[in-house]
Length: 322
Image 1 (cartoon, rainbow, N blue to C red):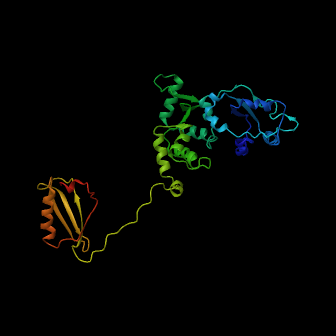
Image 2: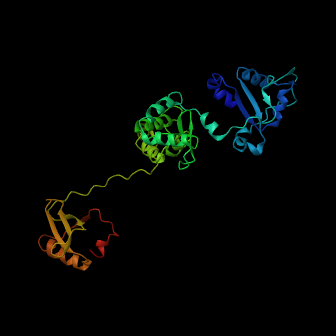
Image 3: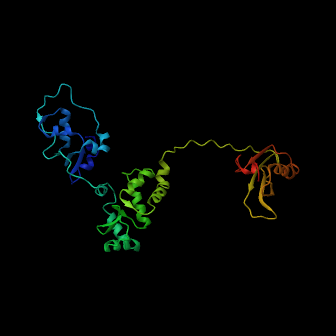
């Protein structure tokens, strides 16, 4: 009942018969003339406009829906004094499972907003791609070299019973957008969007294309909740009051040899922006760096009060050997 109420606006406009699978064998009770309580009367009146059949399927075969079929028993205490009434109209309840749907048939039944126009657009696009046409011709000739997962249905190429989309970026983005941006899709994350697209379509590197599309979706970027921890507030360095009392340093490494030197030690005065470029040889020890610092910085200026290391973590090899 909850499903019919939620989807009433869709189910009442369906011309085909609606199949309802259930593992509740006791629904046979409503297929005969029985006294109903007032709630059951309302249910019966609500279900009259729908064109549906209830099909019984054993619980062991209906595992996915089993968890959704648990509900409270609304039978009133003391029974009911209402007149006998048939809950289901004749022919609505089918005692044993008589319809078996194959996986590719279920896929074609899924709600997809492009199904009405996609076959025509795909047909027009496919004629301009030789690889697509070559695969179709090979299948028609019965070539054994063609992948057995390919087949042809209504002049369109299918891969594992899904539409095979040629390398047309516009068409592929339209398909992904329909399964991600539409009101039915609701801008799902990457995994759910991949599942929705792959249920009906296939092309090489489909997961990568969908991942990239979702990552750069403007609406998702604006509205999705940020789940990582809040960043700390910036802690700017104090403004120095004199020259060479506060410096910053960094190492430029991996340079081609020049007179045996392969690295440059860059030391900047944060007050005046004066820079020292000190060449270094490979394998220079930290003690030698200290002596070089005393000679080039302390000996020419003053002993700095603070030193900022730009982009060098404490575990950097430069702290032990450069």
